[in-house]
Amino acid sequence: MASRVNPETEIADANLKPSENRQKHINRLKIAGVLLTLFGVALFSYFVYSVGLNEILEGIAKIGFNGFAIIICLYFARIVVRSTAWNLSVYEPYKLGFRDTVPAVIIGEAMSSLIPLGILISGTSKAVAVRKKVPLVVGFSSIATENLFYSLVTSVFIVLGAFSFLRTFELDDGWRITIDILIVAIIFLILLGVLMVIRQWHFASAICDKLYDKGLLRNILEDGRLHVRLFENLIYGFYRRYPKRFAPIIVCETLFHLLGIVEVWFILTKLGDALPNLFTAFLLESVSRLITIVFKLIPFVIGVDEAGAQFVTETLAIGATIGVTLAIIRKGRVLFWTAVGLVFIIKRGLSFSEISDLNNKKTENQN
Image 1 (cartoon, helix red, strand yellow):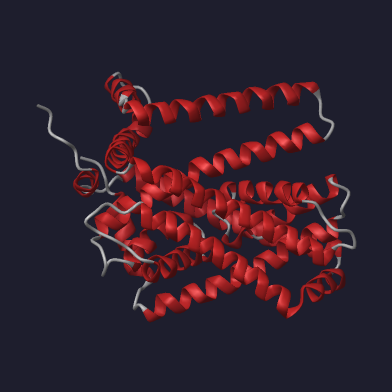
Image 2: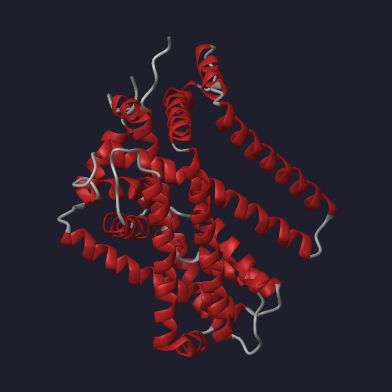
């Protein structure tokens, strides 16, 4: 009889030897992060100059203190729903509560936003923040589980945004056909992934092993095949033990994006003369989420977030000023919660070097 695999133990056992390939990859990402940050700062300066500082300040004044407080509260609600999804992702007999995960999520968001490559250590910082409540390996595995659900829902959200945007405005037939093919492909992959979980197929890791044995894509699969196997076992093990948690976690991740749409809609009601519709807010939030993912190497996604918002608002004939002002106001919200995250980091006695060292140990995964 085959022995049952414990995903948490397997993740712990995977942290064995340093990977030179991974370190080289991280070094390249650091260089890219610095260059992209400089590009983002220049882009931000350009948009502020082109739109006009006075116009932006007038827009910020329309929000006011009370309006900004509402924006802060809306984002706190988003933090709570992601914390709920994380709580549901913890394997028994361990358990985390809101007093544990809410500050940890804020710390993770602060690390992700504040520094280049912050996205690479945000998960580690969350696990370190709750290490007094659960072992680190439990923290890592639960965060990985929640991130997979988040990635799934975010992918659907972005696809819906792209589909809606392309179908609403006139584009060449070539673009329409290409996007339709991509959307169908993504939907197929999502359905295939759901079926894989239900049937617990391991062919993804099997394919990676066969390619590696044949000498194909060795640099990528040297670490990648292990990651595929770990995540397969992690999700399959979670599904076997907690199938009823899948729907509540997906609902939480969906609420995270819906609250983002509400936030954008609220800001637009303050900036514009006419009452905006939720479809406009949906398009702006989906583009913002895509930019956040693609350009996460840039701290606070400075510059590129303003560029994306300007592109959408100009396409919707709302105006570049509103788009850039919207992005800057939301950046103010990010700055606020980053400051709160730094307070939590100091209060809990965490250090950047400690988090970085633990992250390096977590990613040293070659056998």
